[in-house]
Amino acid sequence: FFSSSDQIHTCITLDHLVQTVRFIPSTGFSVMLSFVNDAMDFMSLPAPPRIKVYNEMFLLSTDWDSCHSLFTTLRDNRLYRDSTIVDKTSYSNLLTSASTSPSRLSLLNSYLKEDYAQSDHYIQRLYSLSPSSSEDIFSIYSDFRSYKTPNNSPNHISTETYNCVLSSLLNSGSITSAQSVFDHLIIDDVLISSTTCSILLNVRPPPLKFSLCLSLSYVLLSSDYRTVSLKLLRKLFNEVIIMSCDYSHVRTPWEIMKAAEAKYGIKGTKYCYGRILRNVNRRAREGVEGVEISGDFTFTPCEVSLSLLRDMQENGIMASAGVYNVVIGTCGVERNYKMAEVVYNMSKGRADVNCDAALIGAAKRCGEVEKGVQTFRDFIRKGVVVDVGTFNDVMSMVDTDEGVLIFEEVLNLISSRSLTVKGLSSTILKKDILDTHAMSTPSSLIALRYAVEQCSGDLVVVVGKGKGSGEQVIGKEVIKWVFERGGECEIDQQNTGMIRIPF
View 1 (cartoon, rainbow, N blue to C red):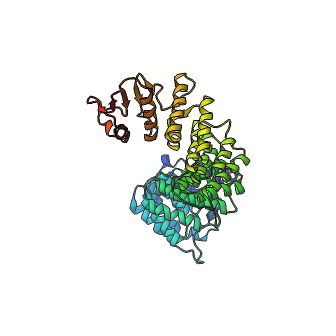
View 2: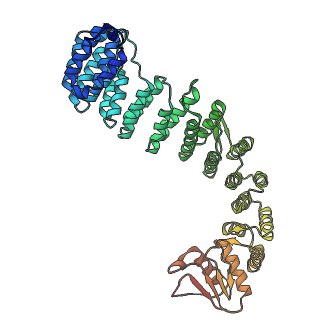
View 3: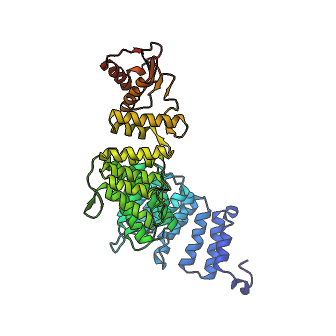
């Protein structure tokens, strides 16, 4: 071919040679090397394009001895040093034939250090061939990071290389090493990519995932550049907010949510707001008086909850019944019944049985007995479904005489099917049998007094569901109540959860 006319010679290009090298599996390394050398000599190619052809041979050949022989010859002849570029592809392509041998990898690494090549590309290539070899990758990464170029400046490590190293270490469970690499990524102010974000979001150990994603969030919120898509940013910030709530934080998720909105226009979701509100409620129940949410300022849990609720309204996020329930509960814990009523009125159209219960629970905590009882009576007369917990709260607020009146009203409404009390039997009192096992002690004793006054024969009080249940608190209180009034009672031997009171 090369002995043909000069007109054909002038048509030969570098791309032709690169394509020809792809036949190396058929021709063998030595035959192809002889051919391309003749061609490049004929074409008078300088060092850079020659390197491109040789690199293609390194990539396509699995003949380590031949590849290594050519590589060392080129290094000794300073082909790479004399060129206008410091080629990095040669090292990575040689990994095709070297990756099965630790000694070969070590040898290439030694060449790498001597030639000041950009080993981050080499690390990426090593990862693509053997992503499980985390020890080799981390070793090369550490060596390269500690090495200085001839002008004493640090070697550059690309975002892609950091991603390779992080992925390899995290997949192999090398947690400590992964943490240090991520710290280096932040220290070096590397441009964060969507790949980096995805890698960290897929970390399995929750504490590590929280630590890494939280650090990444602060970097993305404080930097002036971004290469991560808004969709991925939204997922990252939402997950960090939720994970922060898992660790009972209040200030951290609040700050991230507000910063993400200010910098990227990403607003918190209804679920994120709900999780923060539940954390505030938990802090209130734990007796925490002040919650830090911004700077050096602290606010009461009630103030923080109302601020979050107002935020949701301003952002067009419709609060669920569960959110209103939590905020009403927080106001109750803070002994602020007036505000609990305001929030309850805001929830109309969204309120459910839990909001109703929260309002009455707030009345109980705040000592607003009359308002709590009146609210309960309004509910049951309108046929609003209430639960047994709300019923028990009301019974614990009132004295016995008023309690008997409320119990009678509830009983009549249930009997006429005008009211449903969740968790309370529809046959509380039927045929001289009083079922109290779903009631609190105050409710049970009020119901017992009513039943004793109404029944015409022996009264059976159900305080439990089986053997040993008569030992529960309610059973003991029922027996005590009867004895204090000079009466007698018997515990059913077949079912100790049933107490018989003779007429």
